[in-house]
Length: 318
Image (cartoon, rainbow, N blue to C red; front, side, top):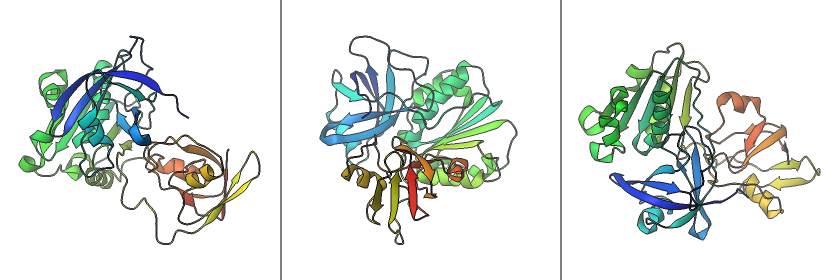
C-alpha cells in the first residue's frame, strides 16, 4: 500500500464560491517530500475514501502543500466531507506527491489553460515558469467571477501580466479555436478543467504535434466507462503463470483482489494513475485518462482499474 504521511491543516481559506484552499504542514516541522508542478496527493478520508487533489503552491516550497478543493454537492462525498468537517489543527493522512501532468521545461513558450477548479495544478506551473523566466500566457475560464479561485493573486501579483480572465456570463465561452487552433513551433499547451472545456481544447489543437498538448483530468469522460458490448477475457500473471478470468461486469483490479493479488489504487476511474501495471503481452482496450495516445499505442502499461482487453488474454507484469 502507498505510504501515508501525517500532516496538519495549518490554514483554510475561502477562494471562491464553494472552493477552499487547505494549507498542509508537517506536524514536526520537517520538510515535506519534494514535488513538481502538476503533481497531486491522495487524501485518505474516513470510510476508506481516497480522493486526489492537485498541489497549487510553488514546488520550491518544502514546508507546506496547498490544495484547492471544490465542494461537489452531486459528487461522491469526499469534497463535502472535507468542506464540512475538516478544520484548522486537524491531523490527516495523505500520500506522497505523484505527477501524471509533468511540466516539460524545455519549450520556448507555454500556453496554460484552466477552467474552474482546474486552475489548481496550473497555478503551480505558472509559478514555476515565472521563477525560471519562461514566457507563458494563462487563460482562465469560469462561469462567472464568483467561481474564480486565486483571483486576488492572479490580478495583483507579477502573474497578472500573464493572465487572461474569461467569464462565461460576460465574455461567453472561451474561443478555443481562435486562441489555439493554429499550431505554433516550440510552444507547449497544458490544460486542466471540466470535460467541456478540455474537449473544446482537444478539438482546437488537433493539428498540433504529438506531445505538445497535455491534459489533466479530474473527472471521467462519458465515453470512457463500461460499454454494452464488453466481454470477458483472461489475464495471465507473468510471475506464476496463473490465469484469471475477467467477466464482463468486473474490472481486472477487482478480480485480482478477489484472488489475493493487491495493487495500489485510489480513484478506480482511470484518472489518478496509481494502479498502472506493466503489460507484457496482449492488446489492451485503454480506457484511462492518463496514458498519452503514443503510450496507448506502445501498449506497455495498463490501468487495471478501468481498462480491458481487445485480445482474448493479457499478460501482466505481476
